[in-house]
Length: 203
Image 1 (cartoon, rainbow, N blue to C red):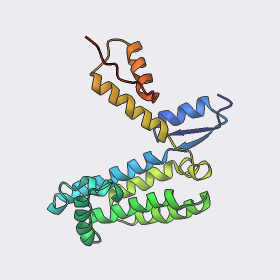
Image 2 (image 1 turned 60 degrees about the horizontal axis):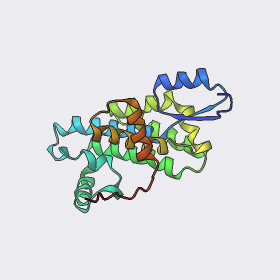
Image 3 (image 1 turned 45 degrees about the horizontal axis):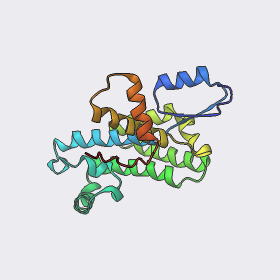
């Protein structure tokens, strides 16, 4: 444990306590994908509330949560139409804050630059009159140092998150396993990128 210098995790208090108790020589980084996830959840909460008064926002969840590069042509066209009205929508303002947060992660070259931009973003959130975005700001401030540590080291949990996704898919496809050893074997098989030629039975 003393040799572990960097730990990346989400904002769970259990993780933070575990790191503090067991890896005392390490720096903690809040994984950027979890920070963006919280921002997405805040945007969607604003959209859900506003859609009760603005029917045009119904069934638009993924237009706001996906990056534009991941939208289909039809979705992108729909998104562009929505953006024309976005400045008059609470959801549009919340979305702009989420985009700024993502831009900080992609563009800030160092901790100082990131902190300056995050401070401005938090001021924007706190003056937005959007309760969900205010809550997001409070959450960011609670984990301020650990979030900023990312800009010193640039570590994420992306590889482990991807592997965990594969494992969950293995579990879903099998609809459960009779014993742990078989489950472990299937994890190794699916996560190892082994190229296994199909065996054709001859009769």
